Image (tube, rainbow, N blue to C red; front, side, top):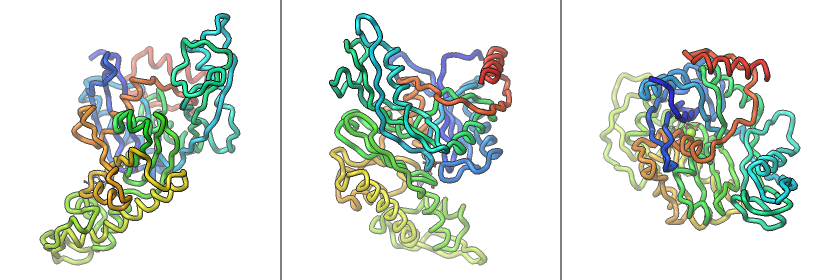
Length: 410
Ligand SMILES: Nc1ncnc2c1ncn2[C@@H]1O[C@H](COP(=O)(O)OP(=O)(O)OP(=O)(O)O)[C@@H](O)[C@H]1O
Ligand SMILES: [Mg+2]
């Protein structure tokens, strides 16, 4: 099948790598035509620790999505989440150059580039610049100044930075899987696109993504991303606690947690009717949901406690008006929202709802968010993919020529 106009998103998670292929529709939505996933053996806490295993996982997830879509992919948008990402507030300013003083796309591009001027430690690199608001001749709060008249254009932007080594390891893995990177997108931006309403983003809301190895909390207010923090704890720690508590294999604990675990003791049944086999014993033992949950609840509470401390550091001792929206694999845990409401003593804690984009399986919500984000904002790649060593997975002559040109001009 011939290649068409399509978008690809890759979510390199601690537990799984997911790839999504979508066709942009004229109404701004995306038609999902391919999805694939593969366990990510080479990722810890959102950072790559084994290149080869990660490349294999990306290839395998990409091939699954390609089989579904019926064609090969050659480029993708990649989501960023992890302890290595930091945001810096910065301002850029330029003079409007056109004779008639009308602000054009080129001025926007220049002012965003001017926000790149920021003192960075040697080991960090700028990944993206997210404009929060524009200021024209001193008037702030402007979302899109193109077409307005002015002399001085300023931007208030968030500069997204990453540790150079971890970023380039990730880029290298994607490249080695035969895929070039069209743009890097903060997962929080992608997720907010489909998990939050614009009213929530205006009023103020925390979006909390509890994944396998990390928990990320981001604050949106006045329609924009304001703050972000990542905590190195997630669902994997819950499984580890359960495995140690019941003396069972980690893999068994993971399954037991998903099937019978709950975030809150008061929601768990106390009848011992679940069979488990403890390590080093041939005998089966019966446990109750309550016993299982007794090893889960403290860790969930700890995740919420640290999250709350981060919110206080961000200047929010109380919840913002639109409260908290929970997402990520752990949000599928029974009773998580109830536990959240209990912990934060507020009714304003809910699970993300992906009905708007029509996906049944929230596992793919980040890649679907990436596709929607890419369709709406066409993010660009700000950094060079160094040392590109692509496996050419049946790419066309034109693409190979483009890659070769990019390599020699790098
Ligand atoms: N029904 C469920 N009940 C409890 N936990 C669940 C359930 N479904 C998934 N999880 C947990 O969610 C975690 C995986 O979440 P997710 O898929 O969002 O992680 P990831 O994106 O791979 O990792 P990260 O975002 O931390 O890099 C695992 O710990 C898994 O056990
Ligand atoms: Mg994730």
